[in-house]
Image 1: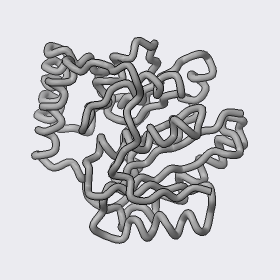
Image 2 (image 1 turned 60 degrees about the vertical axis):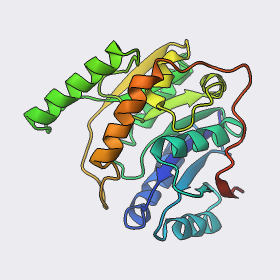
Image 3 (image 1 turned 180 degrees about the horizontal axis):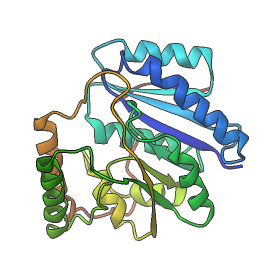
Image 4 (image 1 turned 90 degrees about the vertical axis):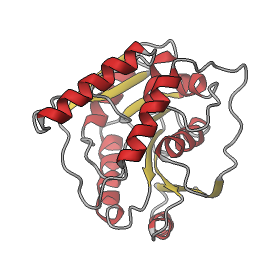
Length: 250
């Protein structure tokens, strides 16, 4: 069985993580029982320079259960850098990785379908929202306009996909050739030259806490989308992230 790393970026998740960490752990156990994850699989929690007790919670989880691993970034580097740091760490340790946010708005049960599609030969499997019926008309309109503009400017995005995705080592080796600081991962993913499968799921409300994507951060992400089409791969993999202040692995 392949080693799976579930990469979870965490920023000020002191309220959320105690409730969602057991769900991640149970899913890892369920995937192992189904023959979809090997015994060395881990939940990798990446603390993105949190100002609350997030890192203390991650350390406690690791001390209690070696299936939890941890990275601490210092200072706060932003969601995309936190995901990239986790993926690059997983690249050296796992056969396949799945990134998902800590709030569990993305349906964790879709991981099984992602792994089955990977076994069929897919190097990348993206989770996509099955509908936006719960969104207001304005939110649906702006989302559709956003994707249309991103595609126009060269960032070939998958509609209704954010950062819930499976990538195996082949895909991560290709991703590692992009050295951008503050990368736009959903744009880079479609530029790796690999076939991409999708899995649909229903998005749910946050388990706890508040969204970390402020209007300012959303606008910044949009700007990164515009520039993503000009990103070029290097000949060698990106160097280790110098902002990793601490690692917890068993």
